Length: 458
Image 1 (cartoon, helix red, strand yellow):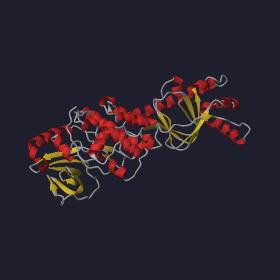
Image 2: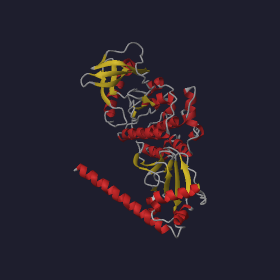
Image 3: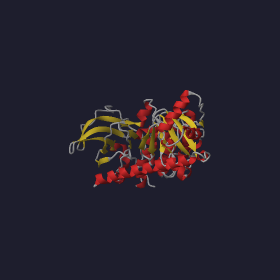
């Protein structure tokens, strides 16, 4: 896959920073308001487009940086402007305009109010796992769009990912820091960029989409642990580590992680491109599915002589649909085959795609039923209250779970396994009948909602 873009040291996005000398008052038709940041390859300004009254960010690359290779630079600039112009995606910062003059080359691009991941990390902020999954999913969607247009970013890193106040993540610097030769890249690249470079980039091998997959894996590692997978005081030492060493598993640095994240990162950071994820969406889906520390289930025990247990049983008999029409002794027989647990806020109870082996009963607290999708935090399909149940369809059909379920607050849950379901000859028929009635009721409700939507569209 051809690479249009060579990227260098990220520019700080803190507003009102002044670079060397006063900022120009005007760039092309754009009226400069302030300096957003500066780096080895130029400066970024906040400016106004007077033609349409739009605020933009303008990145300027002085032509004297390329004076010895003017023809190469001009050819590269025009070719890559055309390539970047194809990238219209909600997770990629839009390029509005570009111009090449006798003294400068500049891009006018979408101005995003927000913070880069670099700023978030440097501020000591530890993002919740849900936010990490959301950001990685969005960045993967943007990169997938670029890869479909045969464009490889080659400089994915925290400084090139900005998060807007509404949570939208966007990729920046799709080739805005243009370099027409590998010699210029070698001279201008800063240590902040090589931390996220793949082994084949250090070996000067032709890059493809898998260098972006490697870099996003490195960004994921840093979001999970607070540190990059490899670091060193010199570029040579860093190169040696990236080429020959394995990173410390993330779960050893963040005890809240399980080994599923270790496997994801290890695959994304594989030394050989063939051993990595081959599609960035596959990486995003694995991140979405990575479970939090699992729940601990234990066999439910009930002392029927205590008032508190009798009160609980009476409440369950009245509130749980699955026990509709049950006598107290029938419900007790059912409950003696259950397991129980306590889930804490944001803890995953069911993961989408996992085997449907249990029916769950929510005794206390609330849970959310969520459809996981790459590029989003997941669509909430329903919020369940005490007395409600879930997992029935998967158990009846012996099929994978069609959605995830996550605790919204501290919850007490019971579950009945598929194996135990049929160990209750006096109860299983009634229980199965209630499950069928519950599923029928849900189907009628879904049809009513669909009918209402279709009427509204008419």
